[in-house]
Length: 88
Image (tube, rainbow, N blue to C red):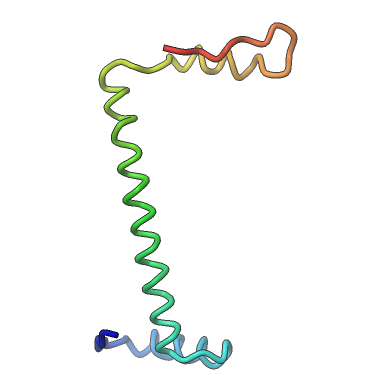
């Protein structure tokens, strides 16, 4: 287990101490949990970005469906004569 020292602003340290007292957790536990959540969220954002890149490349290459066709398809949902999914 690594050890890292941090300096907290006084108001943040007070808020952290209040949360620790209210939740019966240590400040260390709360800080570790906050960092864990942050790191997990960053990994999710990275995966989203990597998933977005192929979509951007597809649009740039002209492989997209005009918005008007998509809107017409959506407006037809649940009605007689429902349109087929617009495809390219």
